[in-house]
Image 1 (tube, rainbow, N blue to C red):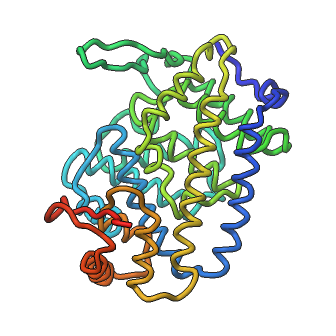
Image 2: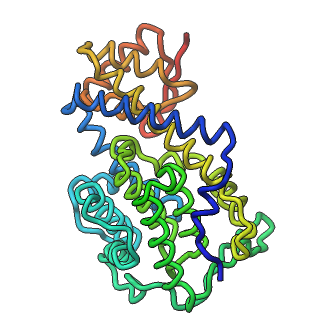
Length: 348
């Protein structure tokens, strides 16, 4: 059985790219703290947007989808789910809410991870909810010609509870003793969690929820305002490639988690950069037209009204629509499509 040896990780010599990413994330986290003190009310609107995006994106990665309207109703209005997909989405919403509100009170232990998994399936009858896997699972890929290939075989069910316990114990030890920077320890924990693949179902979504929990507990709050899950979903091939590259040799303890560490740190840093961009749009009082104009200047290629609404959380939908119409009339923007397929692009 593979041992979780964070001491080997601690002694590893990190390359300049990882060290640069760690330093950059700390710098952005410091800036965010300053921003939050300046405009807390406007930035609070980013929280609701991020909750919707995170819930939608993390489920969509696993093929669990519903309409945009229903996603917002499920997350913002806590409406009752109508089908299996919506039951799974509502469960994710509930776990994310608990993490947002109570992360300080959620220790990193197997028992608490099982409780979160149980809540993930609380809107449906799933006998495996809150229990580690009972059958061997596999990480596989299906190719265009229809054939399926096993990419990685996680731990067997009988080894899983002990492995999950040791993973949590090792993580808590290195964090508690300041033996390893959290920005290194967190990706390693998530990588090992996915290699154990402790549940019959829900491993990917649980790994993304745990990423948010671990970051919050270490003082990195960007996921509260900018959806990390949406960033992962946008480039999910890179996510799977980094994970696959890091899993090779895991059972023998010869794996190299560096590709996954770089991927996750890059995603976190990109989210902080997005936060800074959005802060700049609420930093000073501008007219709706000027704010929307600045938001469109942040976009490259085609974008939708929803993209601009996310960048301008302090402006109403009707004000954004009015500003976009004016920018089209003035020739600054071109509009394509009709109805839901409407998009815009800059002309200069």
